Length: 57
Image 1 (spheres, one colour):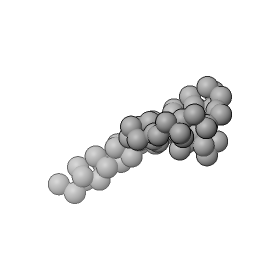
Image 2 (cartoon, one colour):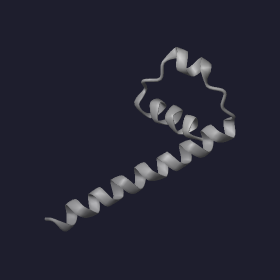
Image 3 (tube, helix red, strand yellow):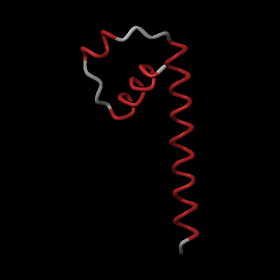
Image 4 (cartoon, one colour):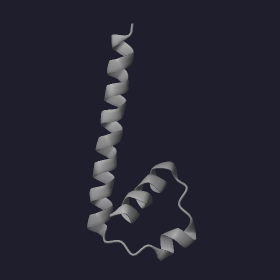
């Protein structure tokens, strides 16, 4: 699962190397689950950041 998280994070930033892409043997379900989890974390992070910034004004 760690490999799937690394793969999705690299895809978020667009820095995945060709060697890394070919060596990873991941199932599509792992990629989808990791993508949904990281997207949720990103959305919650942005939401919390906005709440903190609004509370400080």
